[in-house]
Image (cartoon, rainbow, N blue to C red; front, side):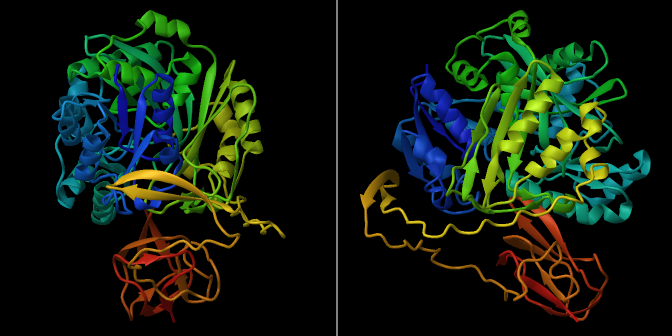
Length: 589
């Protein structure tokens, strides 16, 4: 068994791995960026090492800094979590070259299955049907237009080395191809460090069904459960269920068998997920995620299997703890997982909502679990994924699980950032969802969120005495130590970055919507982020709803639009500028 594990990640998945390792008697090592110095995963780990930097590229994607932390800590295993380096074969090779166990699949399997193009070829070898699309990377807009002309629109441009909807753009006409391709490549590069893309036909009303598989290094495989992940926005999941409900008879077993065949075709071991599209009684291979999935707890709650424990045991060279028949015997009831994201779903826009969490009260009761990466006082940064935590609920059947999830969400209290909870409740209460009649497009095309409003910030408590016991950190040769001390009862001022980013003039009108103060002529941004593209120029005429700039926040690109027709009088930002909520980026006369 491994003795010390370094978690090359952050947030709730780092917390999840630390807890599983602690239960196995394994020491844990955290790594952290400057912004995550006081994060929960850092506080829980036995040791922590500074990576430096703020953005993902400067910290959690800094290979040399992570490898140095492995050397300094003496870790004999590395868990990559999900995102960042979790599906990077070069990173896995760098780990194993040190004689350190990579708690994931072999690099060769990541190469083949992590690349969504070659994974389609592997699926064909394993006998799984695939959605019509390319089996090679596309590099030009003309290739995409030619595919659209042959197969019809809409089509999907997808990140070849991505997942979770990052870097995926749906194209509905030839005129949209170039902009969609550019945007997909920018998002893919920002989140995964690679910008290769491929294309496939975009089905009209599909369900997203996936299969959790685990293999060991001795040739044993099991599929643990199916999951339905059809409640999505921007091709990213909001609510997941296990098992997948309401499919044609025999489909679940056939999917499980196809998933194992695909895994065997590339010599896969450790935990992985094979994703399928299901429509009208047929299923098609979509991709394989060569890592632990965000939604793995919903499989755990219906089986009693700790998948992270299994990952660690497999990486330690042990055989799988159960056979396929034993796994099947452990499945019972129905599970639902709700992702609580820092997004404002008002009007169905799902705008990123970075900020400091001032209050977080998790629900409790029978069949309730909450996996969080934040506590009150922690900050959700614009530079990272916006997942605050995951609510996982078990019920004896699907109606019970839905009712219990609604009850738990209504008890949950989160203040300081907007969250997706109002949208989650709208989904769970809707007859389409309860009847299993929704699809991956249902949230954006059918669900009415026009009545959802942005939360109002709570009023500060009067007469509240500040705490006088303070905590700080000291770094010695890059290793982090926590220090508690008693100081005079005066406010502490946090030091800002040495060099502040250029910021545009802030409007006096306060925060606005997606395009700024309605009718004022000031185009405001509704959230903190980075300008990745300016789409207009001074003197240009614009219409209501026309995109003015592209803003990246929490690894998602958002088009900021004009709410007044007129002529661009002034542009106050340039590509690469950092802006805050309410900042004016352009003025329309």
